Amino acid sequence: MVNTPKRKAEHLKIISNSNVNFDQKTTGFENYQFIHNSLPEINFDDIDISEEFLGYKLSFPFLINSMTGGEKNGEELNRVLSKIANDEEIAFALGSIRPCLENSKTIKSYAITRQIAPDTPILGNIGAAQLLTYPAEIIRNVLNEIDVNGLCIHLNPLQEVLQPEGDKNFSGVTGKIKTLAEYLDIPIIIKEVGFGLPIQNIQDLKSFGIKWFDVSGAGGTSWAKVERHRNDNLINKKVAEEFAEFGLPTAEIISQAINIKDINLIASGGINSGITFAKAIAMGARLGGVAGILIQSWNKDGVSGIQNLIKIYKKTLKICLLITGKEKLDDFRNTTLKKIK
Ligand SMILES: Cc1cc2nc3c(=O)[nH]c(=O)nc-3n(C[C@H](O)[C@H](O)[C@H](O)COP(=O)(O)O)c2cc1C
Image (cartoon, rainbow, N blue to C red; front, side, top):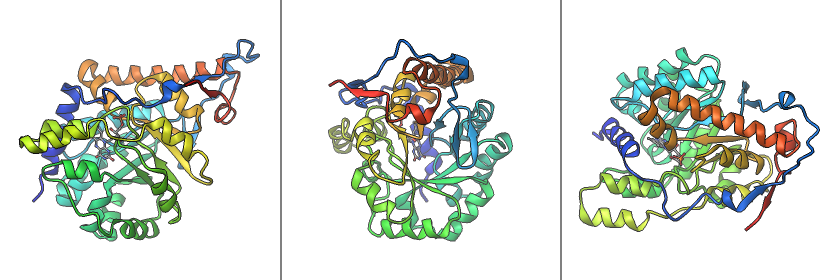
């Protein structure tokens, strides 16, 4: 039996205590600058940064990205994050439901989030490789019990092969994604885990009717570095090091994927400041998703650390609309950024 909760607990510990961010590679958002307007003719109080997402109104386009569930701290973190999501009217994605599929007793540590956050969208999460093991019906039953509004499917072959206990068979995964997308009556969001979704993968999966893509690019948490920490074997450690800086930068993917029609993009991977978040939205992302830095803030300053970070992102976004002379997000997107490098 795979011990997924133990692995998730190790991930949380490493991300809280070690530097596992990319060192050399950046998100690429520093290559863009806002087109500044010092005569905005707007009342700051009239600026509207609310966003519709899966039938819910968000106070601004922020997603607490997939992280927790199943491990020792999982239920506590799920409680904390879902309460913050409900209070701040933002979206919340759970970590992988794999522990629920392996042991149904863990379902309650996920299902608790719907009770705490009745007014905000909650997303489930599963790895594409696990679709080879678990039939669509079983996955749907677990998702129904947790009561989610959408399902993130993460594509993470590099992470899996760098994990000592990772799944290494990806043959047949595309067909399983298609089957699941047809079977479920909730939206699917395809995501990476920080190495970046290639444009070709987005185009291929769009043909199955999938409309949401979280690019989760390079520039934030490097999962090669995380897995390097977890590996005791010298060769495997060195191999993980080889990939420490691997991945497609977040801004590079968004700037290209924005030209693909009829899809919605979530910008994640290194959205570690309010200004980066605002640039991602300006580039055209529907939502910005944040993971690693929330855990680091929680570890350092507790619940208020996370709350403050979210408030900083929100205020920074609103100020960016003012200084670019826009009152609404739809006018702000695709019109207010220029490439400077
Ligand atoms: C502690 C932790 C656990 C994570 N677990 C999952 C997971 O279960 N499923 C998933 O799709 N992504 C998972 N991720 C990846 C994030 O959702 C995100 O794609 C990635 O960390 C890049 O974003 P960041 O730079 O903001 O951390 C996890 C991230 C962290 C920090």
